[in-house]
Length: 86
Image (cartoon, rainbow, N blue to C red; front, side, top):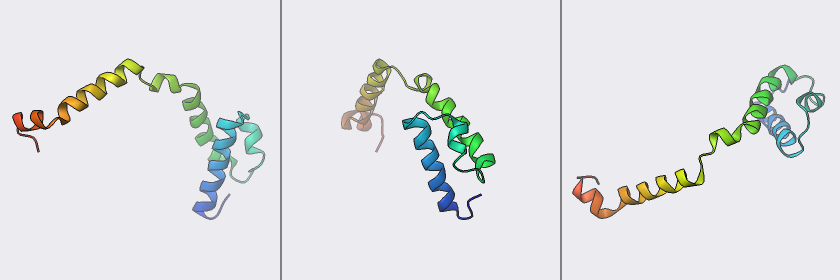
């Protein structure tokens, strides 16, 4: 296992890049880092799940626009003064 936290973070980042950009299987990625595989596997599995399900966490464009409009309305100076906000 990587002794230094920054070394481990570098290894983890490399593994995440391979998972996301190169679409390599987790087992193949872990063969490069056998000493860290017990610690890396759960993190890579969680990342893989998030990559596969990212649509579930991405709001539709119309929802984003509704939030933007609401924020603009709330941040208008006249709204803040009328509602005693600073």
